[in-house]
Length: 458
Image (cartoon, rainbow, N blue to C red; front, side):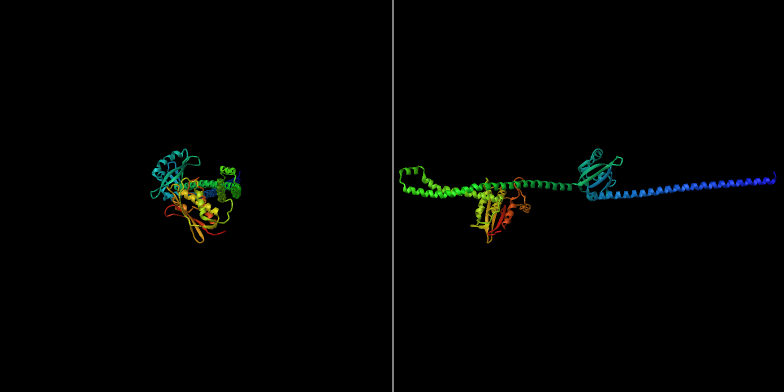
C-alpha cells in the first residue's frame, strides 16, 4: 500500500469517527428535549391539581364561614342560656343570653371551671353532672347562676352529653331558662285553667237556668188552663150563690112549716148562707193569687214579651221581697221607706225579676251577719223613681266593682252562683229606659239603686 492510499484511508476513518460523534450528540439532544417535555407535563398536572385543591379549599372555607356565622346567629338568637364544656367541666362556649342574664362577658367564662358559674347552693347538684353525663340527661334541675353584682338568678337547667363525629364523649351542653319566666308562665296557665273551669261551671249553671226557665214556662202554660176554668166556675158560683140566698130568704118568709124549720136548723142552712159568700170570695182570691203567680212565672222565664201597663210599684216591691225570701229560714229584718202611691207605666214582670235578683244578692251578702237588716226605699221625682236595696254585708271590693255587671262574674264559690243575676238585671233596667248602679254604703254593706221612668213607653 502506498503512502497516499494510507492517508486516504486514514482520512475516511476520521470522517467516519466525526460522523459518529455528531450522531451521538444529536441523540443526546433529543433525549434531553423529551425529558423537559415530560417535566413540563408533570408540572402542568401538579399545577392543575393545586388550582383544583385551592378552589375546593376556598369553597370549604366559605362553607365553614357560613356555618360559623349561622351557628353564631343561632347562639345570639337563643333566649335560653347555653354553656358548653368538656368532660372536666372547663367552659368552651357560652351564648349572649347568659351574658345578658348575668352581666358578665364571654371572656369571664371561657376556659374557666363550671363550678365558678353557679352559686354555692347549686354545687351539690353540679357534682352529679359528670356522673349523669355518662349515663343519662338531666331535665329541669333548679340551679342558681352568679351575676356580676354578686346576686344570684335561679335557672331551670337541662344537661345533656356531647359527642364528636366518632361517637366519643367530649363534654356537656347545659341549657337553662330563668325560673321567673317559667313561674310567671305557669301562673298564667294555672289562672287560665281555673278561669276555664269556672266559666265551664257557669255555662253549665247558665244552661240549667235556661232549662229551668223553659220548664217554668211550660208549667205556667199547663197551669193557666185549669186555673182559667176555676176562675170561670167560681165567678158562676158567686152569681149562683147570690141567687140561691135570695131564694132561700124568700122561702123562709113564705113557708111556716115546722118540719122545714126543723130541717133548716138541722142542716144549718143559715150558717151555710152566711159562709157561702166568704168561701166563694176566698176561693176567688186564692185563684187570683195562683193566676198572679203563673203570670209572674211566665214573665220571669222570659217566655213572652211583656206589654207596658200602669201598676202600683210598692205592691211589686213587696211581692218581689216575698218571692226572694219565702224559702229563707233566717229572714232578715225588713225596713220599708216607701213613698206612697207610686204608679208607673212599665213592665211589671221585668221590674219584679230585677228586684228579686237584687234582694237575693243582698240576702246572700248578709249570710254571716248576725241580726241582718234589709232596707227597701223609694224616691219619686217628676219623671223618675229610684228604688234602693241596702244590705249590711261586707260591701263590694274595688276589684270586683270593675266587673260586677259582667256576665258570669260572681264572688260566690263554684256551684253557688251563675254570675248572671246582676248582668241580666242591668240589661233589663236599660231595656226599661232606666239604669242600675251600686255604691258602698257609708254605714256598711252595699246599696243597689234601680232608676225607672215614671211614664216612658218604647
